[in-house]
Image 1: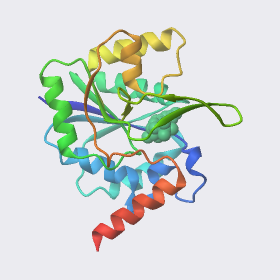
Image 2: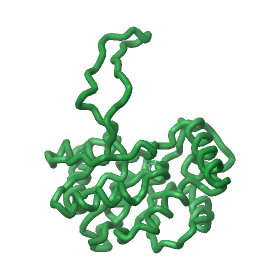
Image 3: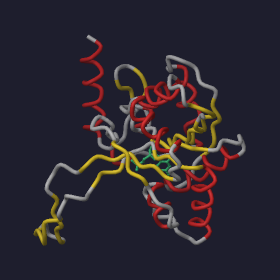
Length: 234
Ligand code: C5P
């Protein structure tokens, strides 16, 4: 079966600083906008169904030119996002529901380094009946909780801690109704979709993420990503 895809790209990327190229999902790495790399990975995956990209209303031109830099064209629907990631995802899910898709992979445009093997693991977990699937990696650093002023209060045991990635994968009906309920209940503070599933009491299955699948958040992440791709191209 194929999976509908929602790619959220409506953020302003404030933590990455200002750039003439626009928000971080449009910054060029390896000569092309971040989002063109992200879209290409879905465009070449056999499991990809209908695709919805959620953008900011001010970014129509940026998105149109980024789209031209994809190496393979992809049929996609563009919708406008909102003030938080949660609102943007819900707009994408509503648009995807209109296509009749049964499953959805929700992905951050600013993660351009996932691969087909990761998508295949997600797909297999859905195929085995999981309602919600979360790619994650075990936390490698020792974690500290500190109070204001930077004084360490405690060391947090990391044995059962994982860092959540995207794409997060769901039965569309399940996550759409959880999202609608969260929005109707005035909850707007969820930073990922698995946490909405958890809140709604839906079991979330972990699958192995990928160490390369980083989220480009800070200016430094973008320059490191650019160096990585440029080095590989030589
Ligand atoms: O800000 P953060 O790094 O958590 O954003 C993760 C993803 O969510 C990015 O791809 C960003 O464009 C998207 N986003 C969105 N709408 C918002 C905020 C973030 O689509 N209002």
